[in-house]
Length: 365
Ligand code: FE
Image 1 (cartoon, rainbow, N blue to C red):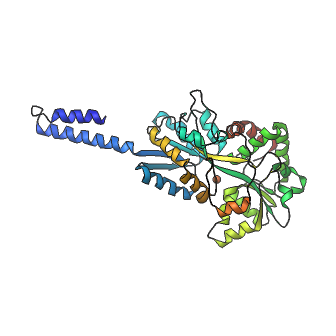
Image 2: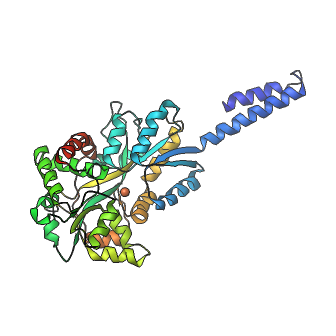
Image 3: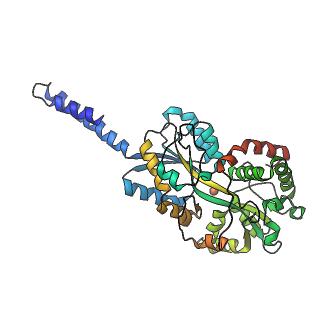
């Protein structure tokens, strides 16, 4: 486009060519088009379900390093997928950031991503934290950070050993004590989908039934609300993503830190298959117009600097191999480390429909 424009400019500036007015008009139009093409080259449109204000630093760093301006649309995972479907090929989205394996899988299956080939991403991100290779050898999405689904408990009423496996949440001793957000929330769909891989669908459904029987209240609120409810004595045990607890531990508000201090935390299933890990990940949109910039951005998110930010800024764990980080809250939670589940997250995502049917049958709202 730019080359065509320069050729036109050359022709119209020949002395024999049309009147001055037309010449000026064409030159201006051409220069404006060129400027807009150059501007488009330096733009990236992101649809993001990452609801974490601390991510702003990463977006700014990327723009500073590359000159690529980021336009961001923030919505929840379901909202983003609905928007992509309705926009179709007219969608301006280049990069999609989602915060759960089940959603990433859904979007992949619905054809909302385009498989990409990037040696940088393939080298950085372990195979179990990304989509299965597509037919063309590309990958539909890459996990960029991980989060553990942990238990918090009332230290007065229970001990660590009472909640050291997900299976134990079915124990009748928790009757009237268990708090958890909606079963249909992607974080729980993925946890239950993982459980189904580990213990089989029949045992998982029986377990879900017992979990419903043990609930202190009908599921409501997000993970932080469950932690607060344990601290307030309304619940004896709750399930949460690790970063919500770390956020309370590192909060500038003393009342938040007091909540975190009141509860105990356990990384379950250390003596069996490990604590369930979910991913937040990224993909290139099917109809991306700025594909090169999109891949560049995902590669940046897998870099040690961005991976460190996921850990220090949002209390997640890096997905990339061999990245060191220094987050005191995470370190105090895990001590010398913990055993994490090694299931391919893509398999977990695939189970979500089956799991939703189980939830409907056992009355898990
Ligand atoms: Fe979250």
